[in-house]
Length: 314
Image (cartoon, rainbow, N blue to C red; front, side, top):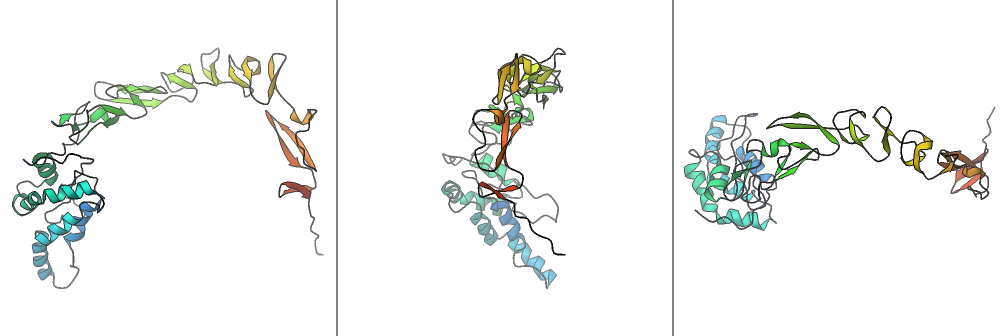
């Protein structure tokens, strides 16, 4: 068998090559460009050429002529030309190197081997593997070839002669087989072949269920109350040991500790004026303040100018 190209970046099906299936029917399996990522044109190329130059007139003549075109060398050349992006050297080089195999299949073997992807890419030039397998020997991915990584992640090398078959789990899952739940998720279903993990309550870092009472650990900014539920710290706190402004570890910006409680600082009553523009008032808010134009004035180009009153015509 011919040796495979040294670098393989993608394994995808090539275009259907036999007679065009009826509208809406499933298309035959297609060949592909294993030495580079196809641009999506392979299948389109076959479909585009399926009824090329036909669109009305003598139906019997068209059917007879179209039948010849469907299996002609002209159509094969057109499909091959659309297999790769013009800038994809590896893909174009692979197609050129194995053009004789493609021609052999087109004219002599496509009835016996209708799945060109399997015959050409997997068995003939050995650059790809069946879905769910990886590596030089096309071994099954972790979790099995039917559901690699138990459907909760991506198998390294899936469908190629590369990779080690290890799993890169989706964010909800962890573990070698993507069956365990990540922090912030809890298990709603788990057996030897399936695992479903669901997000914890917003208060929980880890949990066993969906509510804030099911938290094993609270997220930063939350604390367990007497009912063992994670509740949010008071707005005046940065970290807390319980509910309320008197349970703050430290006071948040805009607050000061007075009588063992974090209380709002009234910036508008400080000796140093907070709002310094002319015709501007200070409005205190929780943890902060706002500067607004005084009554009868409006904001314009960064200054407070007197509002122009428009008269009414009688």
